[in-house]
Length: 273
Image (cartoon, rainbow, N blue to C red; front, side, top):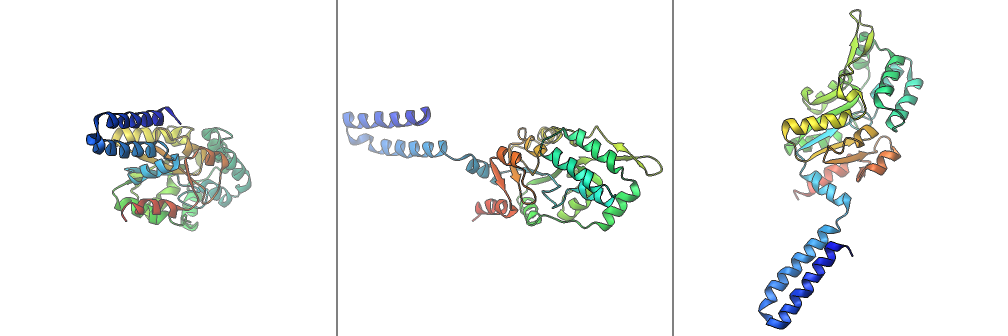
């Protein structure tokens, strides 16, 4: 029994002795104290998962990772395959998402392999379909109806994420992602290294800025990767998502890990029933 519960029990014993000495006039007070004590004990033993679920029901902001979370694919992997560099880039993506190297190192290495041109980016967007993860559209809709602000915070490319945001009804101003740079002739010239999402710890920086700018009190990060998990704190809660790919290190770090967005929808709607 921990110190808090021991104190509660001792208080109850003391009240019982007082009742024996001074009579039954303290009966009502003892009953009240007993209920309060039991209530406090219940709170003290609440599981971490239950606590984070309760907090999620009152969230005022939710930030989603995009690749392998909001969508089924890893956008950079699909772009690499489109450009004929799939196998090399997929290996680096797996290493980066598992925490094997800094995100900025992995991003630079992958882009140096792909070197996508403006025309390739445009053609990819026009021909490659968006594969939303089942349930995410319903979850975003439920959050919007509750007045919760939704953001897409991704280490992917803004040009590939904007169509996803439009499909989900998320304002383009609520996207934080990397920007590609091109020469005047349309050839690849690099990426904007000033974007916080281009480096490790960048998602946490985005979260901190959002909280400072808008005063969010219960901000959640949802994602499948190491860069998502490390954003909490400053995020008030992290929900690991394994519906498309399970990363064991991320699963270990998450107080709440789900493989189906329906679980989050159910948790939200239970409050209103």
